[in-house]
Length: 205
Image 1: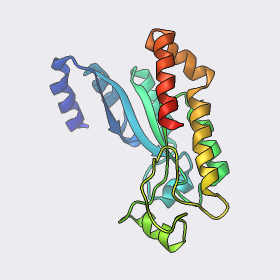
Image 2 (image 1 turned 90 degrees about the vertical axis):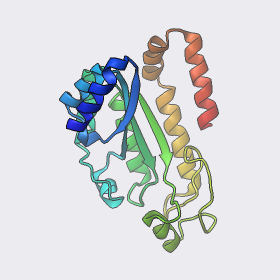
Image 3 (image 1 turned 135 degrees about the vertical axis):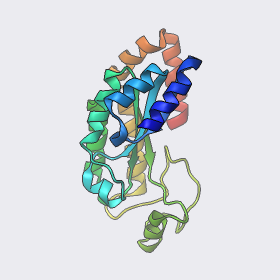
């Protein structure tokens, strides 16, 4: 916390706007207040899932109760909250668990969500598990967009289902009435908003 405050004190006189990555369990009212006063406009948090069993399975040391708390803190301090969710991160993350993750992201009314498909990169424990359990659809790793096409398939959850789930997640979040109304106001004009939607469509679909 002391280091964060020191950085904020150094950045504040510059009068610039900025954003950063942060852990949900490191965000407090005092830190958020300092960051907001120093020009911080958004914070990007890698929460991966709202399911504690899934987080434990992927060795993500995070208490899921801290996620909504951190989002509330950011909103109180007028900092935009973005979260990252990984779909297909673990065999424990069933279709039902992913659906609930998507619903919770919408209920928490975050400003943006980056939905990504879990990818077993060579050299990682996830890669070893994928090879050992034959999760790779083509036998091994190959590069694909983590935002639209998976390279793995679980027992009971196919790669086609995962690809459809992430597409539906983006559609249901970014084309919801709540998101549209919030961002029409933020972007200042319907034209700017439409340009944003077109950019999203090109990126995710």
